[in-house]
Image 1 (cartoon, rainbow, N blue to C red):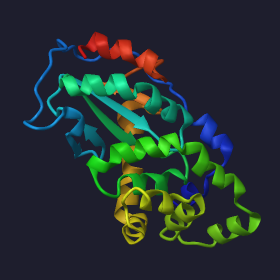
Image 2 (tube, one colour; image 1 turned 180 degrees about the vertical axis):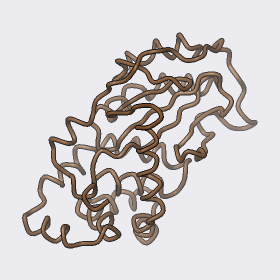
Image 3 (spheres, helix red, strand yellow; image 1 turned 135 degrees about the horizontal axis):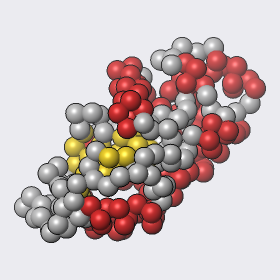
Amino acid sequence: MKKLLLATSALLLVTACNEKTADKSGAAGDGAAVSAPAGAKWTETTAVTPDGGMLMGNPNAPVKLIEYGALTCSHCAEFSEQSSVELKAMIDKGSVSYEFRTFLLNGLDIPAALLARCSGAGPFFPLSEQLFAAQRDWLGKAQALTAEDQKALQAMTPAQLPTALADKLGLVEFVRQRGIPEEKAKACLADAKAIDALVALTDKGVREFKVQGTPTFVINGVTQENTANWELLKPKLIDAGA
């Protein structure tokens, strides 16, 4: 775990952020709209799944989209921006559900993911969108770590590292400005069980869906090939019945 937390090189960020998957389509739906619960929209309907993913939309949607993504992944940030309007429109029809499953690429993903998940599934989605939008800013702070900073980090225990990294990246202040008090943020960063759950979620992605990089997309249980961006993924969702 400590080795993972300290793996912050730019090379790792670049080489792990890709899509190499197997190509098949999922089970088809008919694209018909399904009404959300009274007074709500499907994009406002969220939950934590049994696997530990963050789900948005109709849990019984005929088209189930899973993204294995990382908050440090530049391609994931691009997908978040490109897909925002059209994917949410599909979700609001009730024909598509969207589940984000964290896939740890490096140590910086741990504090970012812990803070994004800190207040549950509802706030997770807008907060993760904002982290993606500001990704260059907070990741850029990692490049400013001095030799003294790195030495201090290496001397820390795995339990201490997420909080220290979050402070160095300005992430505690980032989420504080968005409604998560500093005390709560630091409690989330120190949650060993939550860290273990993120590692388990990553391991499960490798085992079950052969995830090799991010973003990787799964439609109705089938890993998709050549879908690194929204324009490539959208027709596959339409073909599946979105």
